[in-house]
Image (cartoon, rainbow, N blue to C red):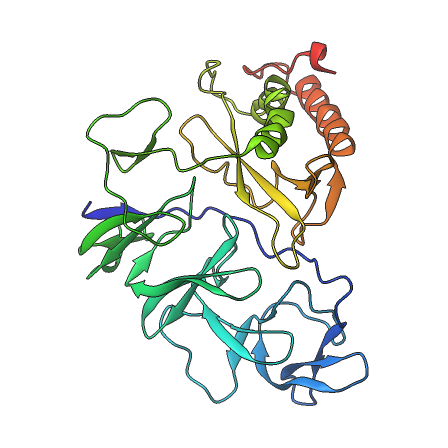
Length: 326
């Protein structure tokens, strides 16, 4: 694996589950530097950040950590890093990896970070779950991430960047290198022409959660592909539903991601990503960038309506959405 072209795939950002915790707010100083205070006005993190995203004075801190999406005044940002993450007590945790002109998104429950030029991963609570040891690591997809050492960015002919050179490997969700299989089956995962064992294992409750989505596979697949203008076979329209995050402190949910027949994340920031309650009985869809939850049936009703409307205005669409799924 000498060269890998990297396309921008928008993945899941941090979710807001700080209900019941101390309310924190961003504030701006007279010279427009950003810090964080609590509700009583106590400064948790001093105003020392030049934040480039649109941030209003008094905006609440969302999630289990504090993200300053910009530069620290008077401090040179580490190469390939962007922003600063603190815990809710004001302790510095890590610098996120620079991706898509900002801090890296969360993918499958973790976000990339940079330390001393190496890349690792942190979870939604700010805990470093994979130590920074490699020169580059891709976001996780279907339980795996590609990594390299001795590699670097190089511009391609179309002005995009590619990571080239070095020694490449594939890691699992624990950060352990995984060797490709000599032979493979349809259950295995293809990464850059090599195959790796399916990484997902489930207990009975988790299998029951996934059956909820698999029972509606045909409906969900037709909805997702209704506006794709290449005729697709039923095999190409196959979707896979996998649990990529389990309940933990500050997160009483299972997160379920959807993948295409190649076992690639559908590439949407939040669409077709779901949650189930800790007891496995209540289901939600992720509604927007801040990952507000919406009851699954309400989400599905809207998706069915929009798919039907699209088909009415684009009657030549080759991947039909059938009324029998209403």
